[in-house]
Image (cartoon, rainbow, N blue to C red):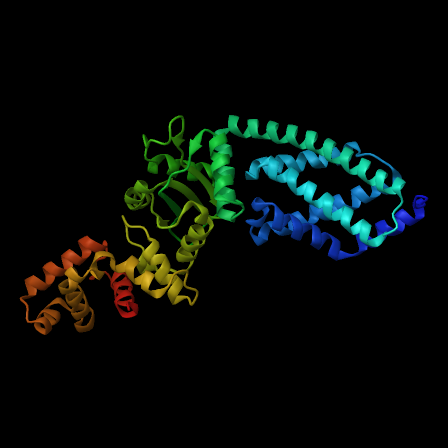
Length: 398
């Protein structure tokens, strides 16, 4: 069987490049066969498709012309590898994705040229093996170099890691662990994600040094990690806001530190490390929608406030019973029924004296129970905003 003429190979190339189903098949195969890519969020898929389209066209060009990867191709591959090192995607997974793509390309060519001659098949195999060998060497080298640079500038590396966590770009918990291990650090777990901004109508772009200064004031030193690692905090900015990833214990200090700066904030402590993006969205939305009286000096909004605000906005991030548990805390225990009765009577009656009469208690006894509610939930029923959150929680509680 004679080989295909160059014109016939070109026809196959044009047919495949013009057919969007080929790129879709490559992306689908990579998504299904490479676990790291299966966990990518939707914001990263356009980039995967763009790289797949470029790689498809270049490899087909090389097959048609019996060519080799050019310096411009190698620069692009090194840039892709550097980006993958920065976002923590393991280089082994990246290289496997290219091998999966090459398999799909081979199958698609076979489907379009079923009578492929031995010479054309050999040319295709030689081109793919050579290209995969070259890109593996170039990308591995670039990945390692970028990895070393990031580890050398750890503050910048931690900031990039937090940026990726906020954007939901981390593919898996395993990739996150690998990336932090390469930096010689352990991310705080449990953690506090604090989103903070200066109070007032004018909110210019947040300077990174302001976020870093807040980090220094809030950081909890001396938290042990695994042997050889340290628990690392980090800070970045999003528009007019500072975003800090801190050990969970820092949440207790956040209100006082922000109050001294005339800042306000929302501290989320109840989400896992693979849900930092969810935590950031909750906190940012809470700051966008909370009324002015929800902010008090010395206090930051919490998970409970954020979930109540999401519920009021019609896009709850948690089920109503979970919101009720977040707000009410120990008050949901059967042994605290007398406190729930006191809270209900106080909210319904509008004053401690009136609530005491409803429950046939002395007013001082009722006020004592209100103080206990405050101590157990960190919510003062006399504060308008906190009373509203308590009212909502006891209303939606099953």
